Length: 194
Image (cartoon, rainbow, N blue to C red; front, top):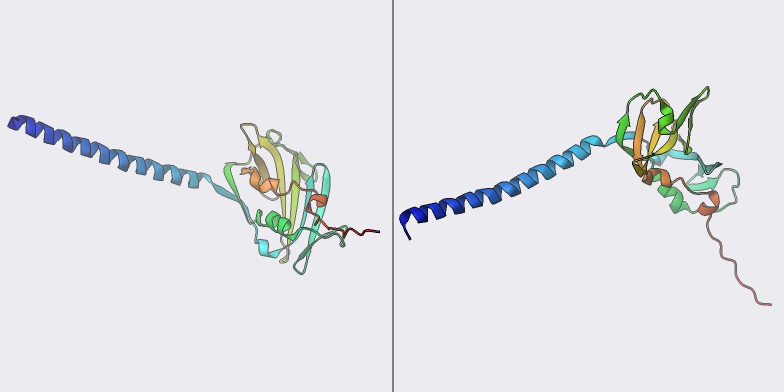
């Protein structure tokens, strides 16, 4: 092999090595950039200290439900004797801790396109309303409007006192898609043979 061919071969190997290294460095750079952009796009719509929540009222399918925390037990406000699945309610409450939004529409003029109607009493949501009360006398009113037409698993949400509309994942809202019958503990009755 001639000296010029050897030099050319070495140069090609070095260039190939640089290209491979550049590929992996570039791939990592863009992966990190995408991760940072995703994190920057996520904002907090509402944070609630869930350890202090003592009452929740919500609407679902046209019906209203209310739960009260008495000591450490959640009860149906209208039927204190009804035994409720405490773990299911704990999951509902924990979904309120940090409601993340993937998009924020700041002070929209037309709320109807997001599933909200302005009334004299305030905001009327299309899907449901969730009211939360804490032991330190804080109250939160959360309105769930329409689902996003481009992503049916996301909903538009508003919080009383905040004029912005937030796009949130349905993971939060689906926790409140339960009737009290679904939250009731199943009781097994002993079979008696006569």
